[in-house]
Length: 200
Image (cartoon, rainbow, N blue to C red; front, side, top):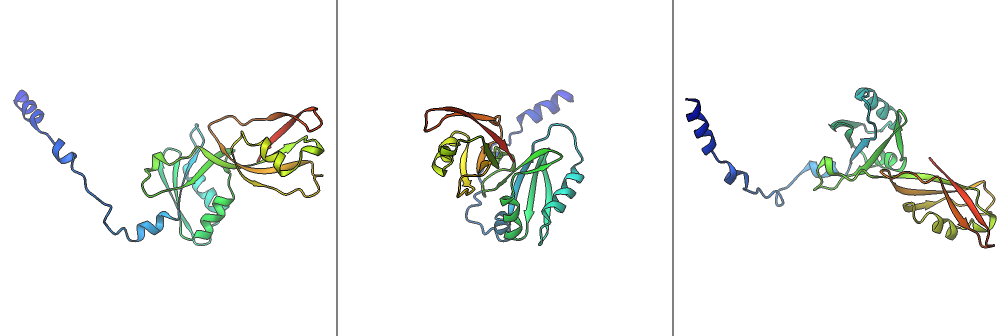
């Protein structure tokens, strides 16, 4: 009896059905397409166990979306944040980086064809303060050259007189790489200096 059942099961094949392709490209997606524009996926960079409900409550309170927001757990440490107004989403994306319990929350918008686990969550914007710059190396052009190897330059905070204690820039950084703490430079006068980086 047992051998007979095994023989019958081994002869079953679903491969033909499994290989069929259903083309969804011509279908009207309706409301779901509009929701995608207001969807953000995020990964909490945290290895130890934590209270998921406390995390969700805190983010709702801190972000305080006027039109509300729904948070769904997609997989361990991976979340979907569904906003209902573009202003709420924009406020959160412009306010990056966000942390919870001193752990970084990396956020990214999604494209229609992406699967949740494959959304690129390796990059996050940071503000970088550059300290100990010589007076003759503070122009925007010098700052741009100085940070060119760190990540994508998003913004340079203005320092019209060049007298601030530091220059501040916003960069898109790869969070899987260590953060550089300083950079050696040679000034226009030929002297070598070590400028310091502090991230926020």
